[in-house]
Image (cartoon, rainbow, N blue to C red; front, side, top):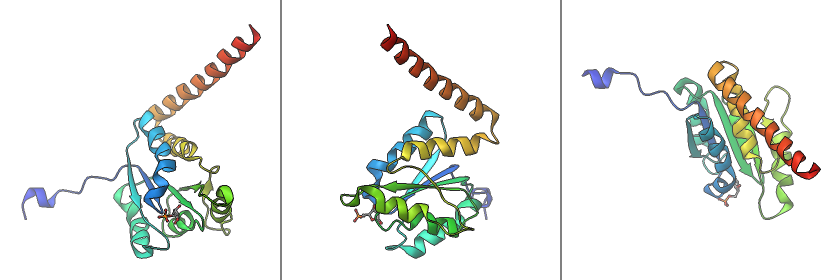
Length: 171
Ligand code: RP5
């Protein structure tokens, strides 16, 4: 076996974004955009709890060993993907309820948020993929001082934006 074949595989990006269908991507891409803003690498996969259950469990089971640190999982309707991924990994899982044409995403929200004790999913708002990405950054920042400083700057920017709007209204 040559040196190239003996070398360790490249570690996976620290954030795995998974979704039940490619139709979820218009919602889920906001998580990727937020991660890009902080220079955090990500990978994205379409893995369905119902249509490809074995592939979904294989990915979830291998994620931590490959170097993934946080999972952002989005699904709509009978949205079992985030919970099923959480059942098959020790990684923190952030669930994104994707709104579909019917029920305004309430079905997705309740499917994701009502997890049994012992298998947590940190659920963001309906369609809240940007916050999912930002929460993933915060989780990584807990052990990454440079990322924590970047999050501090981001939050200062939010405060400045509000102060600017406040001043404009007051003028
Ligand atoms: C869910 O079914 C997916 O997460 C998606 O939100 C929804 C509809 O999927 P498609 O029929 O658009 O592929 O599992």
